[in-house]
Amino acid sequence: MFIARKQNFKPFDRKVWLSSPTMHGEELEYVREAYETNWMSTVGKNIDELERLVAEKVGTKQAVALSCGTAALHLAVKLAGLEPGEPVFCSDLTFNATVNPVVYEQGVPVFIDTEYDTWNMCPRALEKAFELYPDCRLVIYAHLYGTPAKIDEIERICKKHNATIIEDAAESLGASYKGEQTGRFGDYNALSFNGNKIITGSSGGMLLTDEVAAANRARKWSTQAREAAPWYQHEELGYNYRMSNVIAGIVRGQMLHLEEHIAAKKMIYERYREGLKGLPVSMNPFDRQNSVPNYWLSCLLIEPEAMCPQVRDDHKALFKPEPGKSCPTEILETLASYNAEGRPVWKPMHQQPLYRNNGFITREGEGRCRTNAYIAGRTLGSDGTPLDIGSDLFARGLCLPSDNKMTEAEQEQILAIIRACFE
Image (cartoon, rainbow, N blue to C red; front, side, top):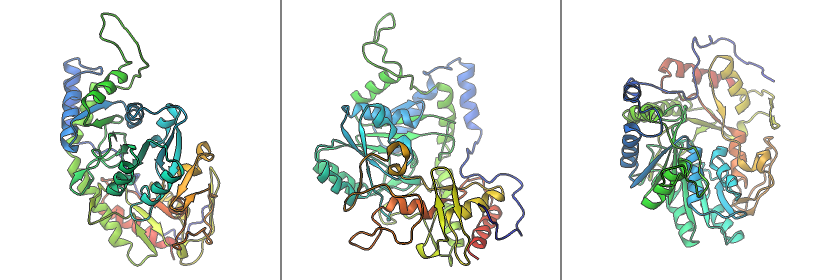
């Protein structure tokens, strides 16, 4: 149900997107080079140069260009040696591409709750998970919306328990933690160049590692695991996962503008942060002492006491307006009515119908699937804060229009629309 409180804004003449590709021209030159030299398949100069550029930027010894970020995560899980039936600790508040590759390899995802400081995997919950699943050998964590997780704490816990780390840096290319780029902290790491990412090839991904042998295995697997023989010889299962030289040309051109894109995204974040002052909301946080995000998406979190009634099932949402209060559903529907795109924050994996029977660990032990409704009387832990933090963020949070082609005037109108929702 949508009830607009204000109708005194003009709809935007063009769609204001959440995050769309920003192209510059060099991309077309590299694509033309692939066309004119007839290297249109999964080999060519663009692939070689892109792998070199990304490895150099991130600081890993090896980079393998692949068809998408999910392919990179899948091959990372294979490289980690996951056995069927093994538990894998995964970020709970993330896109399902972080988790699905575990199931591809017949592993069992166990979801680790989020923490408020960065909206990423909670180290306390991870430690609790190892108490409950002491034989777990693999941890996959993501850097949500381009914000680095508490990497030192996660690494310390994984090292203590001899667990392999896969770092999902799909959303965080260009972000750094203690002066080092995300995408180099895990044993195996994944990037995405999907159409909405900080730089894009329309598709594409990258596997990053320091292990030469692992990179070579990934390259072999990604080209259908063809053996060195005069004919097509196959002795193990492979995949059609290699990036094309055409897509690599687009991403290669985009790499020249990574820092420019990050600067534009940061400006958007700071304008929101300044423009939302005085409202009962906060922005997606990060550790200002240790990390620098890439500001991929700017997000808003409504204070609990400022939430109007909101209920969601698996496909729909309803809300009831109240003076001085709002909710993600109201704000998103209002923005959409003026031709601007926002989005709820990721729905936690343990709430997804596909994974509701999987393990879910909070900082105090086994958790359970919550309903999608926002309930004022949330279950609290011994420290007085909600136990299921991911569900709390999902209930109260939303992703704001963060397209780096958005004008300052357009962003000012978005801010005015949000303010009107709280009147």
